[in-house]
Length: 133
Length: 289
Image: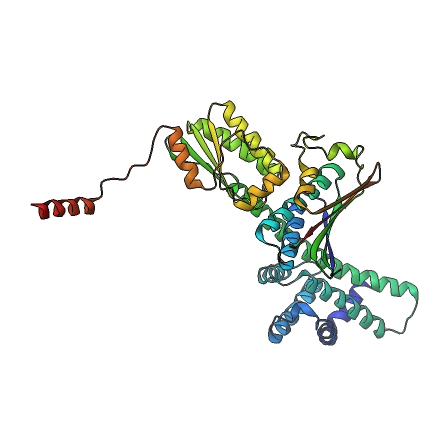
């Protein structure tokens, strides 16, 4: 674990801030342009979910350095309404806001590891990791 | 009583200025003045304290204060320099007045505090207002500038129009893009619209959703939309996200998209006759004879 930095998501433009910070960190770790774009897109999705459904929350970044591999961990936290049916939101094409419904399943495909915890009325916590190959 | 305190301060302004400068120099050794030359800091400090005294003397805010703050804003001095200076001034003056008298009762003490606050607070408020006013001004100007850059529509040729998109697309901009696109298509009587996303840093589901909607709306009013400028990494993230952009043609570059647009409007690029080639042919034919 190297360091931890967080971006609060309150306004729509905070999504851009989070994405830029994430991209910078990813570049420093040594990810290529394609993976940088994947990471930035995933952050964009996560941050937008916070902005759209929870109102406020934060995105945290952590560089992971282990013996055999390096990577970036992104944590999306909010105290919003939570997700009622987790299996539904992980399905392609499911959306409550009239969007494409590709957000969370898309993030899962963009990243290497995906972990979601959500409690109704308490909030949601999503942890994703991308490993440097 | 009030005038009395003021007289004490004005009479001993030299002492107070000296104390203030000493104090500010010790506390000012932190980061923000490190990039500015000592002489400059010194001059500004002197000017600052003079401005404070003029304001007190004139029983309120002076035009010197406005000029001074305006100049500091333009030079980019931090607001904390001014607020700190005012706080130091408050401390120094209160301490000085209390030292001048033997009376040590709480009534007198609170009166002195109130009086000094009455001098200092309006100045602080004015300075903070000036600063935040200038920031708000900058922000609103930039917002307008951004909106002007937002979604230009360029009619490059009869029936063909290009909309280059640069930068992040948020909800507000997406709305503007849609409106400009549809208005422009009707106005320029465009058969084909090229939307160029070379300058869009990230295409997430929301951006894709807005583009799909815009293309669909363009289709409804009888024109065709081609999405161009899809960089390889964007193509990969779109596939990963599982977004279906199959409803309209997409191209990697504006150039390829433009060629397709020409084909769709039954035109093609033809090079005008190359004169050099003609001369070579002529020479060749002469040689043959």
